[in-house]
Image (cartoon, rainbow, N blue to C red):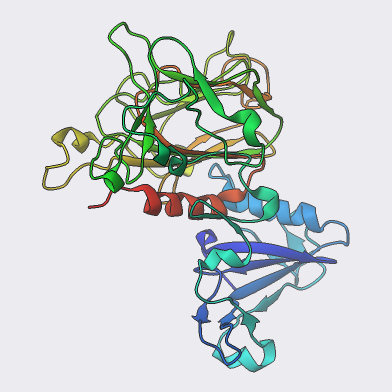
Length: 401
């Protein structure tokens, strides 16, 4: 018998006729950076080998991952009974036994050791680094990536997207998606973070500040002559500075077929529509409750109003990881990796649709915050990796104390 919380799931692999799920507190249970070969050693944690018919490996792996990463569940336990040949995994072959391998000192000689390269981020073994953040594989690296490091050439108050001052896309889709123009008279501006001895961005880094002007208009950044379009699953990361206690607005990203944002008043709400934005309304989900098994989370932090000189300054760095899976469910995670919002699939055209093709060309619209970093990946990288990256982004961009 083997039982483990699902938040200990690390990753899965497959061989013919079996899926191997690895459960761990990290990728390695024990790591020595100075092994006898100079490369270091690490012990794998517990592996559960689940049998299936040859050819069903991908379907079984996906079924297990969906169980682990979907917060709205009616069944909470995976069961495979080889004695009675029964299971609630439809792609599992219950006529074959499950094998459990617990790797510890007692089985070290049997299992051997695996190499770990010392002196770097633990995720460098299987990922690629983009401006201090490791992404899981070369096939799942950012397609859009707007980084604060690019803003280092600009002085504070520089208009972004105007007069040869684009915010360049460092993602794999390249220069076509530079943010190089603004809409309207209110211009997004570069603001400094604590790395420049100020806290105007609410982050440790520089950022682009979107504001509402005295005439009621909001600042926006747009693509010059294209829309970004995408069909299928995706993962999006947002690093947002909130130096002032203001509503973040329902319209942060906007286009003909996609609108994402928050709320027009000070309340913890995620708003999203994947459909015709000229006809239909965004789904709005509160994050301060535990509906669908989510973790309550309040933002913006109401203590921000006390200012940076308060005994306990409010949390001015927000990180969100947003995923659309293959079934068009929307999951949102915070800087701790916790699932704070869940929008179930709505595949019919109309209000709250989650299934439409993504189509946008504008950042801003009613957004009153500072965008420190935006990452878009044309794949659902899963809850585990999204959690790790959210935590890494927070550690990198939170203001210095």
